[in-house]
Image 1 (cartoon, helix red, strand yellow):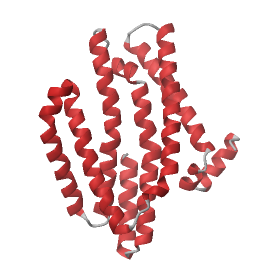
Image 2 (image 1 turned 180 degrees about the horizontal axis):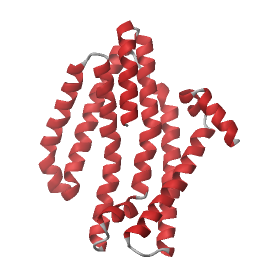
Image 3 (image 1 turned 90 degrees about the vertical axis):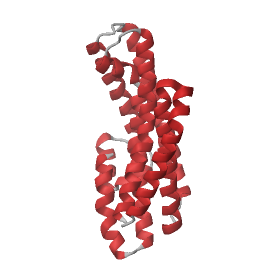
Image 4 (image 1 turned 45 degrees about the vertical axis):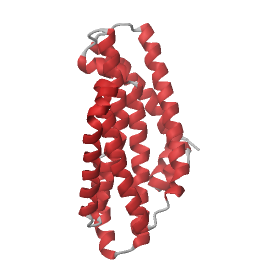
Length: 239
């Protein structure tokens, strides 16, 4: 997310000075597409290996604690998508010299979070603050997306085939990683941190490999990264 943040700010500034709305819309779409390709699989992947990852950092404790910690980490993984999206969109608006929109949307998000915090905590317990944040920053992101669309006539519908393909690919990756984690848990039943770290890394490597292959097989990788991906596919003999 940090790299996309830097890239979006670096590219938005010179385009804004030329006041080319078509080029601005194209750059915003590229930034969002890059974000989708990176963040959605990252979130689903982390959620898939959440249990061994949680135990690696915090220890097993007991079954109840490990299960609750796993659920919180999984939800936090998906919440990271909205946090990342809001960060990227705020950066884009700053690059377009519209700090007021970034601050307005942030204020809306925080207000919604504060309003929902108590009832969400009462309803969902430890998950409550995360749920409140999810809704708050989701609304804040929608505010910015709507404003960018109306100002620069961005065609979000044109992004949907790529978004759907990425989500499907990420779900396949997540299923494979989850199966591997569960299977390794049977053969390596130890709840020790080192064992769980190995399980998490193997799940990440195999799942990440599947996602990378699926993305390289699609046309979307070439659309985003151009000839660099074409050369990589040739080296890997992926058609």
